[in-house]
Amino acid sequence: MSLTYEAPDGRTHKMVFADPYRTLEPLAAEIEVVEGGLAALAQAGILPHTNYDRAKLLAHRAAVAERMDIPWTAITPRMQRLLYAINAIAQPQVMVAVGVFCGFTYISNAGAAIGPGAAYRARRLTGIEIVPDEADRARRNVEQFRNGDEDFPAAILGVDGLPWLEAYDPRADGPIDLLYLDANDPNRDHKSIYLQLLQAAEHALRPGALVLAHNSVNCAGELADYLAYVRDPAHCRASMNMVIDDQGLEVTLV
Image (spheres, rainbow, N blue to C red):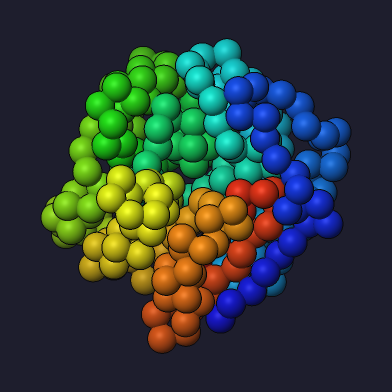
């Protein structure tokens, strides 16, 4: 089932890439747009409810600004809130994020389980980045959220996500509850690798898992095969295009 939630200014609302912490709108406006999207996801049965702790999101956001080295980002505060809220609501025990760059999108997902924004305890939170220098940067950034936790569930791997997902053993490491996709294919159109990544992970996804695919708006052409696949009821239960900014996020229930 293919669905769309679109904010009135969704396709024109955009991040200033080089200014990761810029305020783009009043907080109340941000909350209205994102929570309208959460309500749409819940109505579609993709999320079980819409409840998350707004104060913990702000604590998470403050920690990110204080602790992380983010050279640039396309992630708007709206998208940061949406990613955090989805994870806080779904509470995935095993989360995998592929294509995490400096770690900002990773922590927007994982921050619901680690650091001052933690709303639950996760088993395993894996971020994958193929570029070695950025994987190192992401690892340093995420370590800022350890806070002495000897059982810290977060890890950043500097590997190729495709073979890693193909080799993933859900019996040993647990089925994946939430998969976040934001990787680039260096040999084709940048985002065209999403479908390969999803299909590589299908054997490991828990029934009812969520798949979040960034760039569902600005890279819709590159993602045409992926979007057709997840919106086909033969493959996935439901999928919604969240047009909250010019990048977009496809949220899929498998």
